[in-house]
Length: 218
Image (cartoon, rainbow, N blue to C red; front, side):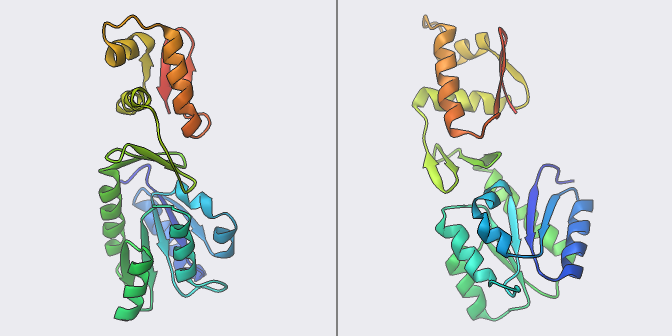
C-alpha cells in the first residue's frame, strides 16, 4: 500500500478517469482526478502539492503538452507521467524535451501504471521530501516552493534535518540544543529564532510548538 502518495490525474475521458481513480485508490494512493484541464492552468501552483502527475495529451480545451510546458516553466519539479494514445517517437521526444519523466501509451495494463508511479516516487523520495507544497531537496540543500528556490542558514538547515528525522514526533528543546549546539552556551531564544527562520520557508502550520517542551514537524 502506497499510503501518503498523492497522485493527480488529468484525463477528460470520464470512464477512464473514474476507473483510474478507483483502481489507484485501491492500491493505497491518494488520488485527485481532474476532468477539465482548464482548472489546472488557472491554479498551476497547486500541482506542487502532488507526488506524481498522470497527464493525458489529448484533452478537451488545452493540450497536455501545453500543461506540461507551463508546469516546468513555473519551476515545479513534480514527476509527470504522460498517459496517452499518441505513441509516435516524435510525440515521446516532444514530451521528454518538455520535461516529462515517463511515457505510457494507451491501451495499457493498470498494474503497469502502478509500477511506473511507484518507480517515480522512489526516484524522487530518495533525494527529496515533501512538506505540503514545499519540496526539500536533501542533496541540493534547498527548498522549492511555488516555483522558487528558498535557502536556510547552515544552522537552520541542520535544525530542519533534525525535525525531519523525527517527523511526527515532538523534539524537545533540550534535544535540539544538544544536537545542534552541543556544549555551547545557547539558550531557548536562539532555538525559537531558528524555528522562526524555518517557518518562513515552509507552509503555515508545518511546525507545531509545544510550549515548554519542544517542536514537532507535522
